[in-house]
Length: 127
Ligand SMILES: [Zn+2]
Image 1 (cartoon, rainbow, N blue to C red):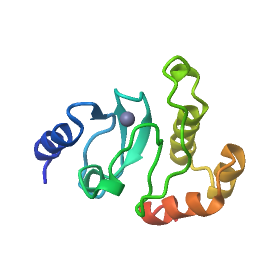
Image 2: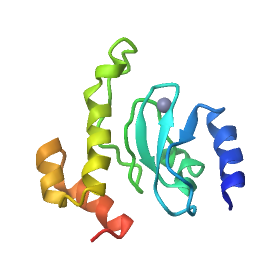
Image 3: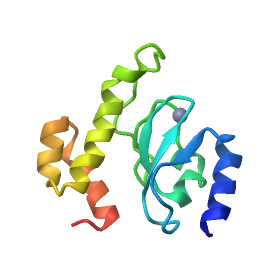
Image 4: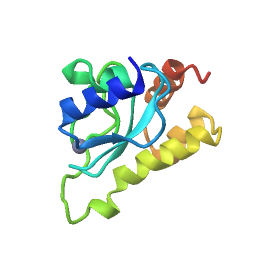
């Protein structure tokens, strides 16, 4: 699957609502996506985003791992969208990952279970 094929498939699945914010590398390399419907930015692997239903983006869920586990549910209130703390969490998570924070530091600062952070790192081959 190349980038054009992936983007065509993505538009088909999400009816154009979900767009990648980072560049497509391969179907296994995680990208950051943004969904126009719920306003979230979240991680996703291309083959998951257009894969099985539980792997696809579900509005108001910031992040789904390879097993379809979600970090947390997010308020769907549109008025509060800009101040959505879980959206901030998801952005901060990405920031911490690219700035080489350890899973422990990330889990502590963002108050998310270490096992979920470890899972992400393991699956991304970061540790
Ligand atoms: Zn959404």
